[in-house]
Image 1 (cartoon, rainbow, N blue to C red):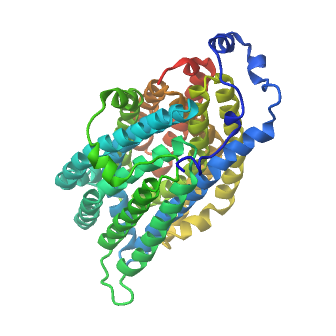
Image 2 (tube, rainbow, N blue to C red; image 1 turned 120 degrees about the horizontal axis):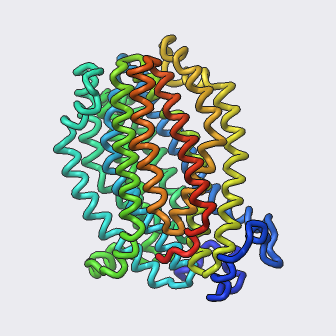
Length: 491
């Protein structure tokens, strides 16, 4: 019953690797590593990739569109540009706490994928249980800390460049988000574990439901319709939290049914509640470097955002609109990255590093192709996309050259996400953490300071810094991946 809806891939049809295979893989030339195993065809590999990627792509697309809709609906308020700045300001410190969950869940996905590839069903179930135990503790801590520190965090982010009214709205938005943080975090752990098994359809379904709830409540609560109060940014925050709670309820019921590989009911979770250090250590081994990576990324982005915030409005509002649009491009790389992480982890669990490389390289090729198409779309239609967020002429005009930069970035940044996902699936999170520290924590803020404050290039200077950061990051990820040491890491 528990394995009835388990996704079958080509990996389930091929023999397990041996110690001799592992040694031979390390001695292969670059040309030999490109050769597919006898009887394997590229179409089969692309089929496996897309079967995992398309639900994630739909989910990422809808999530990004909902985020876009949030900003558009908030922007429809009387003080729309100020409201957009307030929500964007609150999201930056919130992402500090989200980074804790991202790091934890990278470890959950990698460990579950190895268990799935090795055919260890019960071990995967234990990994999910322990992931939820850790998630619960982290979420409660983050929720309390984030709520209590909301005012100083927002003031720090504003950097003296935004009005008191914007800061007040931002604090209100952030406090509600932190109250509902636990539901979001635990739901994300369920999603991470399911993706480790190759199941991306179920997360797509319950996150789609959450998005629909979010948009409907946005309509009712932001400006007030059908007798509901006009709560502004408070309404937008409530809508997001309620939608996440709905997703969590669906995830708990689905996993508890035993139809989706795992068999973990709410009663089982609390009955066997406790820490199993051997399982926790597997998650932490991958998760701690990921935590360092996420922390470096958040701190770097916050430092950079403060530099842009010092430009004041409309520059900051324009920047946040373009950053929101950039999230639409991230969805593509992140969706294919889900396939790459899952298939690499499962391949290594089955002791087939050759298949891990075949899958990851084809994921990267898909990413470059789709990135080129998305880049053209941003380049030609950027003005109209920005016009959906704001009708302020100064904002639209300032965003046009930024959208061109975004378009050029697409085929550059997409393979970075995908190959980094491959490295994380293999457990090589130390390398990705170091790259993030170098580029996001050090390079981007330094370039931002030079471009904005020294060369006085304003908003365009900020985006020149982002462009250079992404190019350097992609180059470093490709270099580390090419070394091939990730194939021998044990999780």
